[in-house]
Amino acid sequence: MLTQRLAFGSAMVAILTLLILSDQASAERIPKLLITQDNWPINISYYPSAEGKESPVVVFLHGEGEHRGYWEAKDKNWPEDLQKKGIACLTVDLRKQGESKPPGTSSLKLTAADYRAMTTSDMSAVKEFIFKEHQAQRLNMRKMSIVASEESCSVALIFAVIDWAKKPWPDSAVFSARTPRGQDVRSLVLISPVKKVPGLPLGDAIASLRQQEKDLAVLTLSSVDDQEDKGFTDAVYQTFKSAEQRPRVFKLELNGDSRGIEMAVQDSRAASVFSNFIDKYLVDREGEWVDRKAPGGNRFD
Image 1 (cartoon, rainbow, N blue to C red):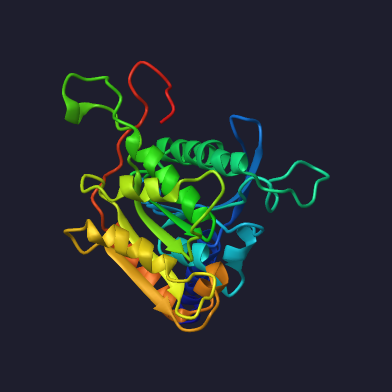
Image 2: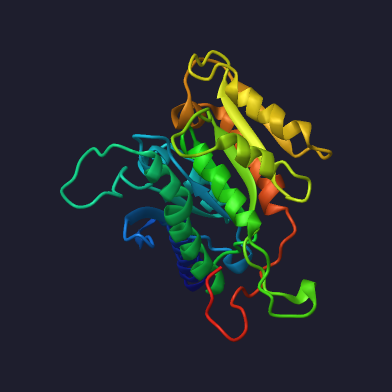
């Protein structure tokens, strides 16, 4: 009997140890340094998924003058919450903000050229990292979402236009057999979007993305008393919604007058709506993992 009790106790310890290690693995956060094509350092935090090649991936962007740490508050960490559900996440310091600055610099003024570079160079470096993780079968880039706040909403929208403009590699006479290239952004979450961002034509981006052939879901978040918003978030929602024949464009208006990341992460209703949106319009979307390395070359997506 004593031997049985000791064996049972040892088994329970082993199970508890595995559970603890599993929980630690699910909360893993890995800092990464990416270098853009124009040699700018872009720092990210990577929350890998334990689900492997069928894991969706969500990219979190911040507003002007903020940094990726705004998404990583200890008790209000949306990336960590998604990671626990088996979703890979990245939080990004866009150029000249957070840790994405040359050594020895503090505050740097953002220009129209900087914002344009965010949509091309910065987001291309992020996409290349995701591509490499996809090829290593650690996530599925065909299920990609971008969560953006304030100024970065324009960055996300224009990057999505660029991504959807890419056609499959012409490596097969049969169109359906061609290696996919781009068209990976399947959903966007836009929090307190800003009407005018230097160098980024937001209206043109929305007009392009609202076309029916782009299989894109959109969720907008704002607060009812936000004096800076002045109804712009609702205008963005209405513009997307007006072209929709399917119920995949949504808005959530929260009480109060706050905006951006702070508004979203502090509201339990926002967290619940966001989580359900990601489940339905990213996790449950069609898009099995496929090899993205075109035959005969090592071409980046």
